[in-house]
Image 1 (cartoon, one colour):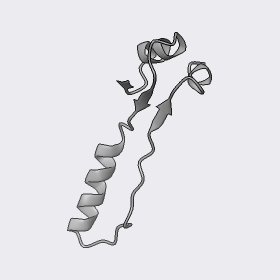
Image 2 (tube, helix red, strand yellow):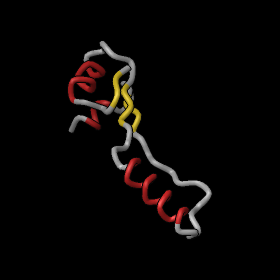
Image 3 (tube, helix red, strand yellow):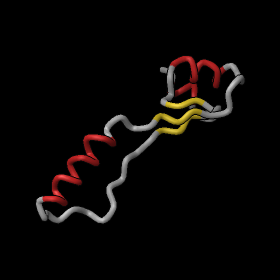
Length: 66
């Protein structure tokens, strides 16, 4: 497995040399800091803040490489 859905990782998936890759959202840090600042100020924050990641495998690698 590789992390972040890099081109070399996707190439390896397409060639059958890799089973899966996950692209973690680079926007988690700023979002987490924003929520922490709001909480510290006493503002209402949602109980759950979802950060979406991407999962690549042989079923979706070709469409993801275009």
